[in-house]
Image 1 (cartoon, rainbow, N blue to C red):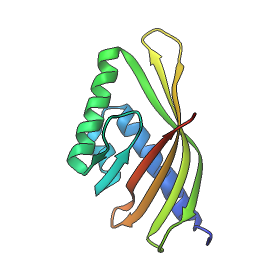
Image 2 (cartoon, helix red, strand yellow):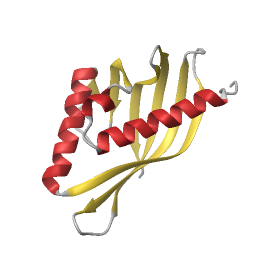
Image 3 (cartoon, rainbow, N blue to C red):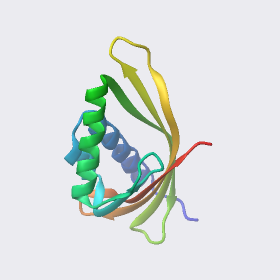
Length: 139
């Protein structure tokens, strides 16, 4: 496995920051744009995988609407990121921990889930994007 250039590692961290802030603030189209146009999101927390920009945008809209309805602010906290080389110089694989922390109006924060992100990333003209995200729940 070859060493991943530092600028690519930093770009992946920025990508994860953009994703978290976008979905947490209800910017569904911005969140979906961090995936490739045919990008996939697969998680055991949801009944079906989502694929493609329109489906990813709709997913993020539903997620944020659920938060607003519940009165709880959710935060995606991505940490312990490991970026590995991919099949080519234009692909990467990233593993990270994702904590979803919720804070009800006037209440104390609580951990909703601790998961592992397993991402296939591809370099595009706009920078690194997620081709496929597979979420694994901690047992």
